[in-house]
Image (cartoon, rainbow, N blue to C red):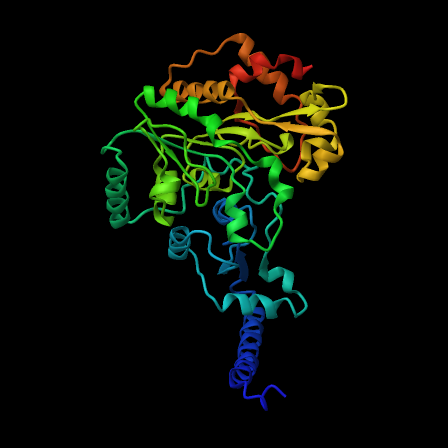
Length: 398
């Protein structure tokens, strides 16, 4: 009927689909026959979400290099969905075997018995470094000499002199997903959002310490409310896919909440000052130089904050939807500007080697981390909670 209507492209598509399927099945049969000699796997890169695009991929390669993925394999990848960052795609395409035909090979492989042995499946915690590999394994991505020149030139255009230290900072903003996927309701993620203006006192302090501070974000709602020339609202003025990666990979350290862009400094081994972390049980614990402060949870009925033990001894520690907090009568409370400022100052001084810890600080760290039970979310815990945050919230450790 479609042909009679003159839909020639429909007929062409059906014929091409048939031959493509035949070709894919022939390749899959050859893959099965050759498995004793070379084990081929197919993997879908989560190209539409930058955190998974970066973290899942890098950690898989680290695990493969460390021998944690079993027998050595020949991996064929393909991209899924809209590409969230073209520069990151370009860099992965340089080091991975990526083919558009990989999707069809994966699709038809799954239609034959034994398909599981030829598929790279991403676990839900695939972007968590539970084996401590990032500290031990070399990076898999690098910039070409030409890209380094391009990046350094762009830094100067942003007003950052050659060799000047800079930090990046970002707050999770619902505008990004609303623009990229307008047909989907993303309200269930609202509990993770943060107010970028609460970062301003902290980055102002860093500017006084001779840092430049670059506000990141692909799509943001609000411009920064500051006139400090060392604080650059890159997200609203000069943002590019290339510089998103270059800045995140070259910053002195990165300040962020649970935002997907943290996958970039993570895979380039840059220290991260994590603010507004939630849910509590999912805080990142593998960064040797990382510092963390979580959001606090206010129990409306009792008019008090939940203790860390109450959160971690219940399902609340893994609540991942806004409606779960609402149904439990819980308000998710952001970190204050003072808490964020204290954290970035501690990060600066720790990285410079001038931070002075105390026995009380170490005891508070031990008390906090002792509340975490062994789970699939954590390996050896090496990150630290902000010292001033624990000092001011000792009652929540009871």
